[in-house]
Structures are given as C-alpha cells and as structure tokens.
Length: 347
View 1 (cartoon, rainbow, N blue to C red):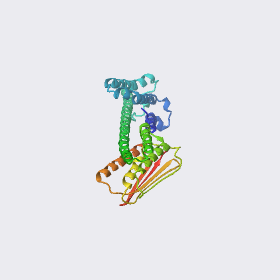
View 2 (view 1 turned 180 degrees about the vertical axis):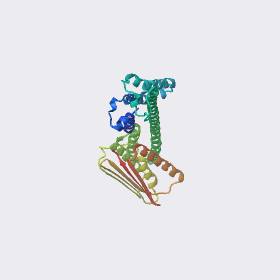
View 3 (view 1 turned 45 degrees about the vertical axis):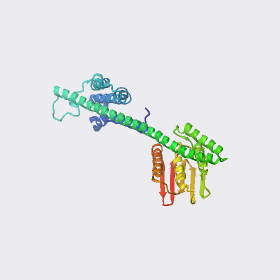
View 4 (view 1 turned 90 degrees about the vertical axis):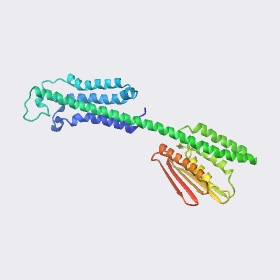
C-alpha cells in the first residue's frame, strides 16, 4: 500500500505525542528535577518506547497481516502478549535501587510509607502504562481502518473514472461514423482522408485512453482530427474558428478530457437552416490550460439534451477526481449562446 505524505505525517505525529506523554506528565519535569534519576520515570519511559514499537508493529504489520485477513485469534494473542510485555518488562529491566515510594510524586502529603505505598506505586505505574497501551492500540486501529477505507474509495473512484471514459468514447465514435456514412452516400473524394482520420482517432482511443495522462500535443491531434471530421457536415452558414496558442509539447493531460466540451458545441451549435457559429480557443501559458468554447444554440429534443448533460456530468466527475482544486469550470448561457470556460492547472 502506498502512503500519502499526510498519512505518514499523522503516524509520526502520534508516535511523538506518545513519547512526550511520560516526559511532560512527569512530576520531575514540572519541578525541574532530573527525570533520569527517577525509577518511576525510567520505567514509564521504557514502557512508552515499547508502546511506540507496538504502535508501528500493529499499524504496519499486525493489522494488515492478521486483522484484515480475519485471523483474529492470532492477532489478539499477539496484542495480549505485547500488553504483558509493556507492563512487566520495564519492572524487570529497571530495578528499584533503593528508591522508595516516599519519593513517588503521587504520594499524598502526610501519608506514611510502607507496604501499601509499594503496592500503590506499582498499581498506578501499571495503570498508566496500560492506559497508554490501550490508547496506542485504539489509535493504530482507527488510523489503519481510515486509510483502508480511503484506499477502497480511491479504487472505487478509479473504476468509476474508467467507466466514465468508456461512456464517452462510444458516443463520440457513433457520431463520427454517422458523418462517414453520409460521405460514403455522396461518394465524396474526402472520404479516404476522413477514414484515415477516423483510424487515427480510434488508434488513440485504444492505445492512449487507458493511460492516466498523455502529452498535450497528442490530445490536440485527437481533437483536431475530430474537428476535421465534423467540418465535413458543416454548411456555408456555419462560422467556425479554432484558435491555439502556447506550447503543447511540455505538458500532459488526462486523455479524452476536453473532447466532450467540444463535441457538445458541434452537437448543439450547428444549424443547417440558419446562421450558426462555433468558436474554440485553447491557450497554454505557464502550465495552465484555458479552454473557451462558444456556440450558437439550436433546438434539440429533450432526450438528446439529457444525454449530453450526462456526458458533461461524467467529465465533471473526472475533473473532480483527477484535478481536485486545480480546475475551474464556468458555464454561461442565454437563449441564443452557450459559453463554456475551463481553467486547468496541468502542473
């Protein structure tokens, strides 16, 4: 599993907090005395180191190896064993060396020492170590479950994005084949070149659309081939302009991301019965892409409009997934004009 920087930072932060707890909570830390001479602090700090070791072991190994594979008996057996280690090992490693419970910071003033104090010293020490272990256990479980859910959601989103791309491509190819069919009926000399462009488009869809990103010049070649095919069905009353500016060789973009916006313009901007226009401006500057598409609006039936809106919604979902906080999509329309502007950070 790949960990995001924020996730790793949170894990490190938790471990630092666990280490700092016995230091900041120490009576000697508050009074400015030497903590390292305190048996209580030495044992508690040793237990804390063991707790941090358990935290990392549980998070990176035990949970994915045993808990997520439902081998619960082995998992909880190891957890209980480590709990005993945290409680007993500091006591075994660090001997009293004559330090009496009278010096224990939680001893009430005026209370005499004795066997009860010895018992209270060990009981409170074990209680604190136990609490720290339980907190470490719960945090490691919660963090790991959170990351597991995040990974599952990422995979789900990737599957949805792949499905959305599959929705876009056949719809576009269907429209292109309709144009080629019209050319073949007219026995146009433009048909062979159009077939080559369609072949180039299909090759791009097959070989490049499965990639997460492609070079911008490849995407532009795909768009230009599409536009050339759409021009075949334009009439003289249509005013079309394509303007490009900037370096298209230095940046990458998600494949098939822009074509739905352009396809939408051709679908709703062409009207053979009256004057219509389509203007497409694509500008690249300092790693930013600015796409502006304007077109006249024609009357279409409700079913076609719903399909187009679905295609644009799919593209917006892809934008939100692939370019979170790195894009701005603005749509303005009147009764006669539809205008779309997309600002995209390619860096």
